[in-house]
Structures are given as C-alpha cells and as structure tokens.
Amino acid sequence: MKLQDLGYNEALETSRRKMGFECFDVGRVVAEHKERYHVLTEKGGMDAEVTGNLRFMARGREDFPAVGDWVALTIHNTDFSLIQGILPRFSVISREAVGQFGEIQIIGTNIDDAFLIQAVDRDFNLNRLERYLTLCHASKVRPMIVLTKTDLISEEALSSILNRVRRGMPEIPVMAISNETEAGYETLKNSFEKGRTYCMLGSSGVGKSTLLNHLSGRSLMKTDIISASTNKGRHVTSHRELIVLANGSILIDNPGMREVGIGEAGEGLETTFDSIFTLAKKCRFRDCSHTHEAGCAVLDALATGEVDQRSYESYLKMEKERTFFESSVAERHKKDKDFGRMMKNYNKGRVGR
Image 1: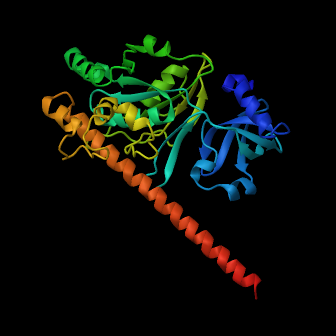
Image 2: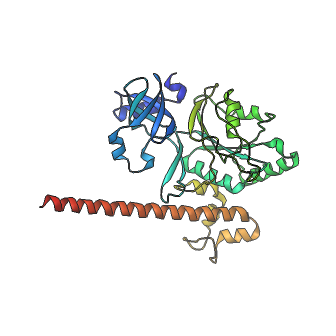
Image 3: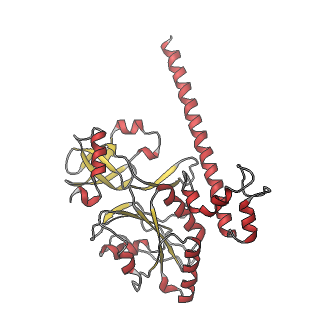
C-alpha cells in the first residue's frame, strides 16, 4: 500500500520537510488502544508508542496522536515503532470529554466529510443533529446527513422527517437509506471519493456498523440488536478505526455517542445558527443574551415565528455549554500557571541554599 492510498499528499510532504522529519518514516494512525496505536505505513501495519519526549512536551490530550493523524516514526522492526511527531492536522473533530470539565476528546483528525447518522424509527432528533453540525462547522468538515432504518416507518412519516430536516438545515445534503432493503445505497455510495477521508457520527444502534459492513463488502464490525426494554443500542463498536474502502475512499468508524458536549465550538455555533447570529447584529445591546433584553431582535423574531422555538432553545443550551467550557479552560490554565510559578519559586529556593 502506498501512502497516497491513505490520503497522503504534497501538502503533508511539504510539512514533513519543514518539520525536519525527512529521516523518519511516515504512517497514518488507524486505531488507538489506551495510548498504544496501530499505524499503517508503506512497510505495512504495526503497533506504535509515542516517545518519552513527545509525552513530556504534551500539554493536553490534543497533543497526543489520534485516529486519522499522520505521524513521523522510527520503525524498529515489522511489529513495533516509535512516534516522533505529528504532522499538522487540517481538521480536528472533537467534543467536550464526558465528565472532564475543560477537556476535549478528539473524535478524528484530517477528515474531509462527516456522515451524521440517525435512525428515523427511534433516534431522530433535530437538536442532536444541530450538535453534530456544530462540531463539523467548528472543524471545517463538510457534513452530510444520513437517515437510516427507513424501512421501519411509513412513507408519510419519512416524508415528514425529511421536510423537517430540509427546512431547518437547507444547506446540508440529506440521504435516506435502509440497511435491510439497501434503498438509497446508490446515492450514498456515490458520495464517496477516492483519497478523501470520511467519518460517521451517531448514537449506538443507528446502524453504523451494518452500514460499514455493506460499504466495505465484508463483515468488519459486529452488529447487535436494539434493547427491547430501553430502546437503546449497545456500544458494538468499542474503538475508533480507520478503514480503506474498495473504491479508495477512507472511512473512520466511531463508537456511538450518547453525549455530544460542545467544547471548542468556535465559529461552529455561528454557522449552525446563522439566522440567530445574523439577527443578533440588530439587537440594541452588543452584549445581548437574547433571553430578556428590550430591543432584542432575536426575541422579536421569535415572537413573530421567524425564529423556531425549538432551534432557539437548542441554541441557548449550546451557547451556555460553550461559555462554561471556555471558563473551565481558562480556570485550568490559570491553575497550571500558578502551579508552574510555585514550582519555579520552590526550585529557586533550593538552589539558593
């Protein structure tokens, strides 16, 4: 396998030379298991670990390799290598780490397009779709919505869902498919291009593993049934993995996500809720919270129906999460700085003895 088959290009090679990594081999991280990685190179696949220096210099989880990363590495034998550095990422999809305030969890890197997958029979939720969209917009990754299990609802119900999605997210491509009948599969398959990297985002039980098996033409992932008691899917996919499909496109599969925390949303929130942010420019006060202020253009539009109540509430919740995350990050950085200052003064005191 050539590096180009994994998405390597001239821009990455230029970055490699600028970083002084010419003497190292190059590979792409295709799986991660508790800080041990599986990397594909032109010499084959192998396990890898980061060097002690890379671990020491890391300021947070984002400084460690993730699935999708291109890395420079020293190959010691056909089974093991050491990762010396990470080539610049052109995109990073991440969310707030579950239960860890101010920390992010990387979902995948160097991704071109993301399929946002929801099952129409039980999982469909516009608020969740808006969260996935925000993650994609923040990462400059092109989103596409895939509605699965269409064989389990009536045509009228499916038409209603499609209309709701297209009305609320008119710029986003939408595909409806059935893993049982394979209806809509041709349209989906035509969305894949050789050399581009895709990922799938969705809850457990929406059919991601079945879809991946269909797309690859072989059984790569285990599938499971939906729990009759909870109507929720089980986490069949237990780790992220990068797979090269038969047509030369590259797909990253992810475990199902029950929580989609908004972390470093950046401009992602503004893109997802463009109509609200456009109206906000007309508010009387520059720091308007759009919740109670007089002269709020957003509240005026909400009263007339120009802004959808559901979308407005979804925006407020995510904006609150983003603000809290940013304050958590600032607090963590302050603590790290204070600790560093304390250690510096302590070491000075020891030297002066």
